[in-house]
Image (cartoon, rainbow, N blue to C red; front, side, top):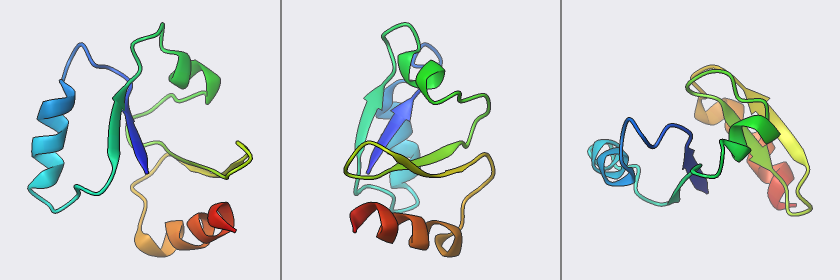
Amino acid sequence: MVAINLLPQYNSLEEWQAFLGEFGATDFVWAADTYDQLASRTYNVRSLGTTIIIDREGQMVYRDEVASTYEMLKPAVLTALD
């Protein structure tokens, strides 16, 4: 999994890693969208907490703009890995 910080000017990747590490969320790669907000424009991200799952072919298989639960994400992750 890759987490992309869309507003790196407000919080560094290290700050996010430390914050989420407190909850045991350490098994993913962190990146920052520093190239003219390309990720947020490409995927039309408008709110904090947007979750997008992309399959191996680069197709979006899931999108939400709410706090995602395991039950919500599991089917989409399995689809993306298939």
